[in-house]
Image (cartoon, rainbow, N blue to C red; front, side, top):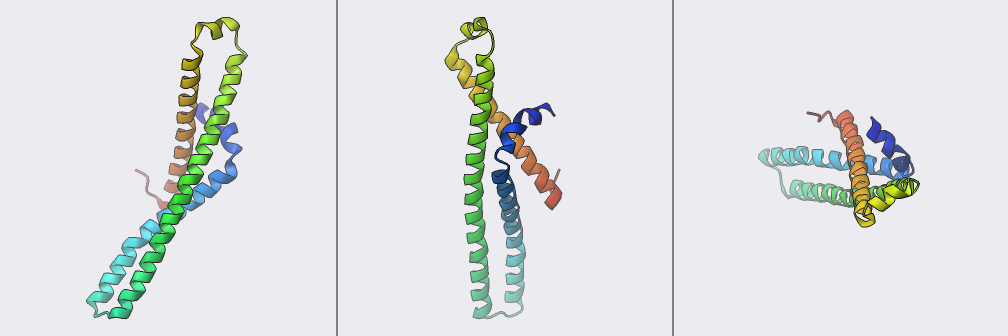
Length: 147
């Protein structure tokens, strides 16, 4: 697609952060999928006549998984925000440099503040779209949750 061809140079500069973001996102998904199984096992053990040791063990495991999930979610949010902002900024700079190379009559016929705002908004949305499509495709491959 042409959209990915436009975004690729700016995303590949940050490929390490994007890969880390995607890997941690997979773990966040796995942590979320483990919770129902863990709760189901806990309920089954209580039905079978579990004691306080079972409750304590469940509490520790449940707390640890949720703390890991929350910490991982925070890290992915920070990585996503930094990567998206940096990529969009670099993309916007490239577009503005291209516009600066155009004829003077084109530049004079446009309001520079409006043009800068449109460029920043559009490049930001393109980068967000590309990252989200890559993330969705990776999740579809790993978890088969595509509709």
